[in-house]
Length: 391
Ligand code: ZN
Image (cartoon, protein in one colour):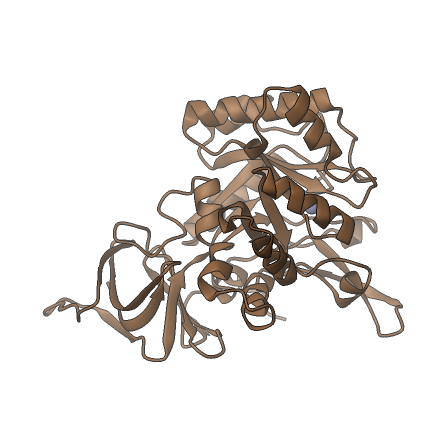
């Protein structure tokens, strides 16, 4: 059992100063008065000067690596469980990336099961960048309906030179399969679409919505902030009821080339009247990011980092004056509700004990609890990788 004493709780709405008690992996009591736990063995964590929020959800991570676009040696490594914890992330949704050949659904699903064994929460999408999509069972609808951790389809690449340029009919068929499987299994059944830098922006998705009987909410387009023109289309899409996923991992050179920082994009969407329920941040973690020196000379590759999520939340609050409770919704309640991740995304009684304690001034991550287990305390990891990779 863990008892947080009088932290300022944002669940993600501001609840005020509360005691929060966890047991058996759940939040069992939230009270404005001190909770008396008698002589039970409880770890007490002082919340003085701290903010308690739900564990973060990162709904677009290349769990078993992505990239590999500069030859085999550039295939990016797998994500490790401790990268989640130090970023305050307790739930991830994994996807394949550009390479759906050397990386498989079997590989992705095995990684999801492995992360669950390591104590964090994980799901994945079925399908691949390319169409016809890679699947586990040879049928998309069967994957989403019958395989518990598979909650939708993605990432399907459109408007990108690396995509297989699906037709509207092909994308509609994928969306129908995802939708039916979702309805039959009580899952989200969404289609996570990678938007590239091509000239067609959201046209393909707009065509499917116009010409087929598929609701706009079925599509979960990501990288919507990757250039200024696409972002303008993203605002219109959101005002029509569409979801907008903003990618947080970036490089200064991408911003110089016109990428809209996720924090700025959030502020602009909110100012246009878009509900925060339709806006999410994801890190694109472990996708490859090229690095350049100050002269613009290619230096090598790194991977998208999960801690860019919290960095973007802080930037939204401090630089763009987005209220804290709205900024954290993009990484808690909004993805939890849209993706139907029950028990996640809120600090509430009966919910999963996924909690992050932040410094109230700096928002530095102090403590992380995942499924009731203390994983980070006073900035120090309390859990170990199954394999420790000494360097
Ligand atoms: Zn992508």
